[in-house]
Each structure stands twice: as structure tokens, then as C-alpha cells.
Image (cartoon, rainbow, N blue to C red; front, side):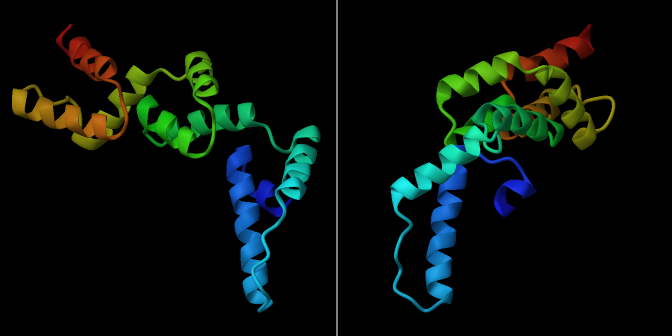
Length: 151
């Protein structure tokens, strides 16, 4: 309950944390490391889902919004969600349904980093592109920024 009260977690992420907390408890009590049985962990996770304390869809939606606010693009968000145990189909659906304007988000990140107006020389544009790609933005969104400037 303490872990879930701090922020949303995916099912896999919570399972890993609970397994680690069981290992830490055994270490602190100077006992033999006895892992928490998988069937007990699954019961706890199912109980949390039944009470709506654990919801992968809600977690995914909130995670996408949070990472977009922090200036990360959809590719980076997708990778991080996969690392947290969210399946590919759920990620694709959540990214398709999100109301995040990735082009505007990329433009905001570029302006914060490189100032207004954005660089126009080829060398400086490529520096902006590399930076935005490292933040996980798609090339289409990056190119749209410069198309909009030229228009």
C-alpha cells in the first residue's frame, strides 16, 4: 500500500518492487533469503487490481502525460513503458489515444534549449535534430518544426 500511495505503478514494476522488499526484509532480519512465493505475489497484485489501486491502462496514460511534460518524445516514452512491463499493444493504443501534440512538445523543448528563433543554418539545425532525437522525438515531428518556421 505504501508503494502505491506514492505514485502509480505497472503490474510488473510493483511485482519487482515487492520481490525486492522481501529480499531486503530477509537481509535486515539477518535471515536466510526466502523469496516471496509467486502465487502469494499474484494474489496481492490481483487484489490491488480488483480494488483499482493497480491499473496498467491508467498508469500508461499518466506516464505518457508526465514524460511529455518533462520534454520526452514518444519513442523514449515507448521504450520506458516497455521496461516497466507494459505490453506493446497497450503502449501503441495509449500513444494513439493521447492528446499530446508531439510536434508542439518538440518545438517547446527545442526553444527552451536553443532559444527563439530556432537556428537556421544547416549545422545548427542538425544539432537541434540530434538533441530532439536523443529526447525520443520522431523525425516527422522534428522536421515539422522547421517546416513551420519556413512557412
